[in-house]
Picture (cartoon, rainbow, N blue to C red):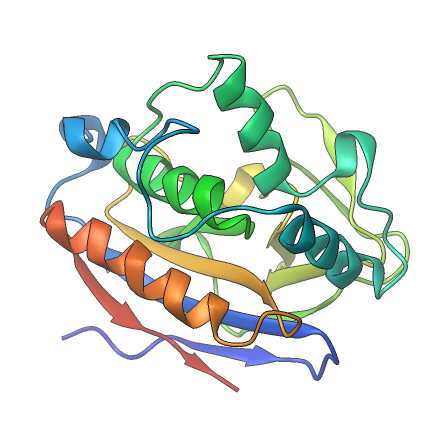
Length: 215
């Protein structure tokens, strides 16, 4: 049995973070997302959560706390999803990312998904120092994460509520992921409830999920 994954969380007045690990039966290259999951990638699909302007505003407030400006190309990933789905520009990527996108789309909370075998302990959640950055796509584009809440591993920041790093993203060979739900204390218990639905979707698809230790 795999050891429990531990993530140290730096004290933050607004953050309500949750996380869990997912074990997939086969590498993503040999796995397809079920049709019922992809059907939820629709703005009008029935879901237990509804995005709102209030959630959107409080997520931005969460990211602003450290000095980051969550606007323009630096807006939360959950906002990008609404536009991408509305413009019919979002297709299936892999089962882990598809499930993440479904939950983030409807809940309004940004979510990070990293390949657990591409990160190295210790793991922590903290605000990135000034001058911090990383590449976020195969083209080598870089995001400045100064002042932004991030997931860190031993090599530095690797994921956040805006864009996850290329070095820890899922790939065709991925079989284990770590999901981080970036919730806000402005909506108590929302992150916990959203995470429960997220895990339910993955388990319905035949995956095994386990909580992480946050502290």
